Image (tube, rainbow, N blue to C red; front, side, top):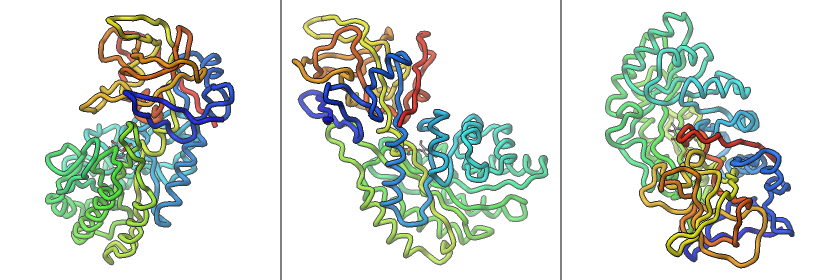
Length: 416
Ligand SMILES: Cc1ncc(COP(=O)(O)O)c(C=O)c1O
């Protein structure tokens, strides 16, 4: 078996670990040619390798201090079979809607191990969370009042943590979710007043939740963030009705999408966290800490398979027109939160070798935004050939405008 070379603009693209070819040059998923999966299930098709996700969980455990909890952020990939595979491996699920709460329960995650964060929770969602015994990560004083009223009406206890909008930013993140004006969480300066309102409310105070940003490859920035977060929650805990049982430190572990990216050094981050937790203030002595991760656990474990429908030349360039596109894998076309469009790693999946050429790999949507590969180098491909776009395990199918232009949805298969 061989590794997979893939080039863009003369640079070698990262092909995530675990993806290899057999002697005939066919790309394999869990030991099986992906072309067989495409033939059996049709294209476009997302393929997720469960063993690669498990390997990520093991890598997390090996690097992080003992007792640090791992929660899976369902938003990254809510495929039911994948959720069922991940549920027994982690201490909890993070959900962002009543719909995800339902997915989490269907996957076998206990209600008490589910945290629900996200702005704009509707009353029915709060009610469902209270009924399931889930932890509501409260995003505002107004939301807290609604949780209280709903719990009273239901005559049930409600478990709450306050999501804090910290006064600092996570350096080097692809996407910021805090540190400044934000719809997420309660400004740290307001938290003491909201904590005071908890007294006598009948709500069960569980702790604090922070989530400052996503797609960060800089372990020092993440370590600085957790150090600041621990110091901040220690301060806030002085105003709380009880010591926090759980502090969610966020996550935002990034993955290397592009040639200049380097994988996150989780060993260094884990060592820093061990030191921070060992030295934490006494008020947090009995507190559990958790990271809630999506992308880092699943992004590299997925590929998106799409078949070449047409090959054409225009103004000196070659275009491979495929049956897929941004309606399934928006992020790979550079239209999901990126400023500069860059190519995700991609490769011809049914064979390797032969003369290479520079091509544009485009989708079948009638918009110039639908470009999966911009002037990438691939072996000469023809209609019927299969192209694999890597890094498709997170924020793929469900983060894409599937209904746009009325093309069929992509299939999904879990292997491994
Ligand atoms: C509250 C919360 N938790 C967890 C995540 C997962 O982040 P990631 O996929 O970067 O690990 C997000 C992402 O936006 C989030 O908003």
